[in-house]
Image (cartoon, rainbow, N blue to C red; front, side, top):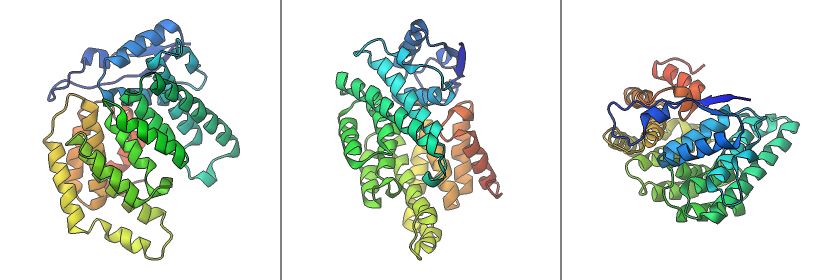
Length: 319
């Protein structure tokens, strides 16, 4: 079976990225053979951290369910293979569950969902056992732990904080794991956002913007207190919050990176948050920055999200 799963299109003009654009745009075909996986793993190892994280997410999104991911792993010491298998299985689990609330997920989906996540966790734990400092493995382990109990989250957190070359998405997953909607609290989420925002300035400042979005979203959709909707409606009216978002926006617009998908992450987050805050012109500018990096279907958020945001920026309903 010859599976075309991704075309990463990142133009060189207007950025300083040290990514080989000829390789990025190359169509990679995976047929499950050891030769194909070997080539992919070498290619993955040449990418900067966030670009590698995004490529693995796209792999998980595009790879048919029938592909046996164990064939990507040569042996117990094959860290790249363990990461590939673990990341793809984690995304596969998300695809099986879908984006509905838990009460609307079909019963038969849960068994497959948890099975994939357990397999993903095992692969990724094996990877960080061999290479505790591997930031890509630690980030995917954190991603897999978001919908887990506190013990699993705590262990993944400890591994992530000791790793090197952590993709910004790894810190984003840590933030998600600490949100109130995933069993954490606003205080815990903000502690993560403020701590991690110092890790990779300025791109990591987008984590603060994400935390604002998560707190507003919880108030707007999940908080059952009578006053919650009032607080949600007033949230982005705070001048302190508005000033902070605009300062982050300015820093990100003026930033440069050797990893182009750090920029994609940051601009994508700012576009969403600023649109909700009513800064539509600024949000549109961030969206244009995202558009410089190729096919939106391969970027954070996905095509449906981008279509909805574009409608919001035009003053239309998101549907």
